[in-house]
Image (cartoon, rainbow, N blue to C red; front, side):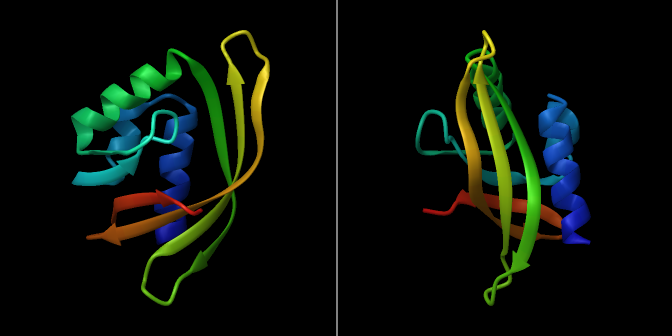
Length: 113
């Protein structure tokens, strides 16, 4: 079930459990570097990016709802709360993430503009 897979990925991300989050993804997953710009591909690049990101900010992302798109992707509206390391809020609002699945795993994620 895609919603369970995606919820598992968000829960692992919020728990800072990189291995559990990566287990929901294909080895060649394409992931946006929202904090830095551009994309990373694959487990090691995501691991490196998240490690850098969490050294600078403390994001928490909670899915609010999901909608299947006509092309087979899934659009997930999330509440995103980002704090700096001293606890000050950097961002508090909703964002749309679009997931592409392959073989019951996340193959790509985009941030909707």
